[in-house]
Image 1 (cartoon, protein in one colour):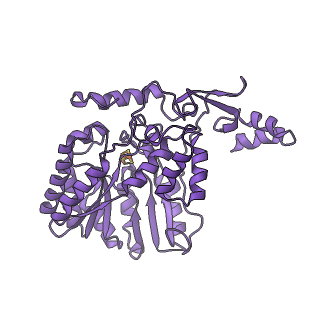
Image 2: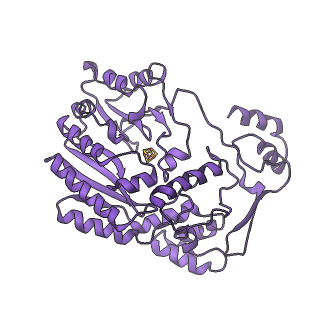
Length: 402
Ligand code: SF4
């Protein structure tokens, strides 16, 4: 921000185009109008993305904050989405690098807030105005001093606070954690396991075994929690029907291992995200069928299954991999009433002016294809993303659709 303001001061009286060109020199500033995109054809792939003149950087550089003081709420109100909760950011990014995960890949490197210098002072201040505390981050329990943080929150003076945790890594669900949470009015925890198949978890780089998941459930119950919600996904690259069977088996094994604990499985559809090794894969069109299969199998065995809308995952995929041409479509959709049918109607109306829905959402993209975000630097170079993709593909000699 400081660099931006300094640069702005230098040209504040100049014409707009001069201002924009000058500001584009500040690392981290992206001015879309200074980049020209050409296409193979009106409804084809991107051919090139070039700056409009040679002084403009060809690659927009990412800026990364590397300090160890992270964010905390500045306003606590009952009118907030999470009412009256004081939130502290415990970690930023996630070191696990599951290959589909934007929350990890786009925000690397993993950083944690200093316990003494950032977290405890923030919590002390926050708890003077509310009794509800939320610990935020993609992977909160991976804070290197998480145990000390728990001990700090376990003090008697905090007996009446309500504690919520955004995310818990499965193998960090100890009885101690479960006890502290249940004593602090938390009834359930949520953990993302993605699948019950060890093979598929290797492909996506989720370093987790079924035994660890079962142990987490046993510990949660022993610590007094009443419920666990698992998160899974269908349509992940390399997924076979047998992997769905493995998920069903895992849920049944959990039911047996921790009787009385309420179990549910929330399940979404894999959607490709930019700057991840799986950005080249399309949404698997079998996903809807697979969600229905899991629903039928699990509900008949008394396990609560909560699928996310497949159709909205398709729209997510569209927005996730869309390029500039999508803006006209989104504008039409807005006027048509923002329903799923509106997207189809808008595609029909704009036929010939942009690629079909399938191109954006379902097709696997060529590795050489120019991506809509090619000119925006991510934390890792594209060669590294390709290497991670190749590692995934090499597991069990899988041949993906690419
Ligand atoms: S553990 Fe969760 S947050 Fe971390 S990379 Fe995997 S999916 Fe993303």
